Image 1 (spheres, one colour):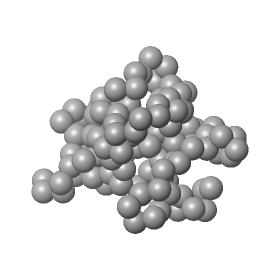
Image 2 (cartoon, rainbow, N blue to C red):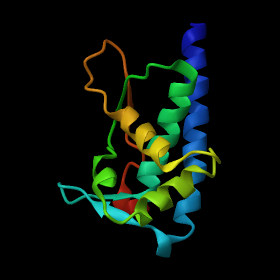
Image 3 (cartoon, helix red, strand yellow):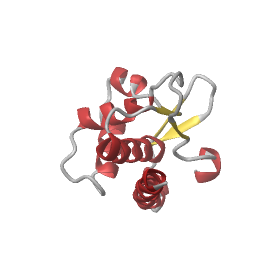
Image 4 (cartoon, one colour):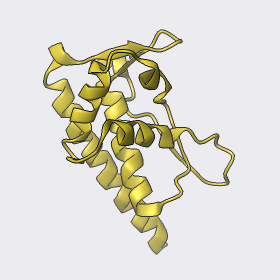
Length: 133
C-alpha cells in the first residue's frame, strides 16, 4: 500500500509540473510551434515538453521506467531546423533548468515502451491537442 502511495505522490508531482509548463506554453499561443503527425493530428511544444517532464520525474523516482507515451522524439531527431527542439527544451527548463536538448529527446523517448511488461505507465501528455490550440 505504501508503494502505491509513493507512486501516486510522484505521479501527482509530475502532472503538476507538466501542467505548469503547458500553461506557460499556452500563454503565448502565437509562439506555439507544432508538427503534424502521420495521422494528421497536431503535436505541439507542450505535448513534447509535458511528456519529457513526466517521464523524467517518474524515471528519477523509480528508474528503469516502463512508460507507453503518445509522443516520440524520432521526428524531432530528423528535423533540420532546431527551432522546435529549442522551444521544447526552453519549456522543459521551466522545471529542469539545466537539461540539454539531447536529454529532452531521451526523456521523450522514455515513453517508447512496447507495453509488454506486467505493469507500466501510460501517458497522453495533452489530451485534446486541437482543443489546447
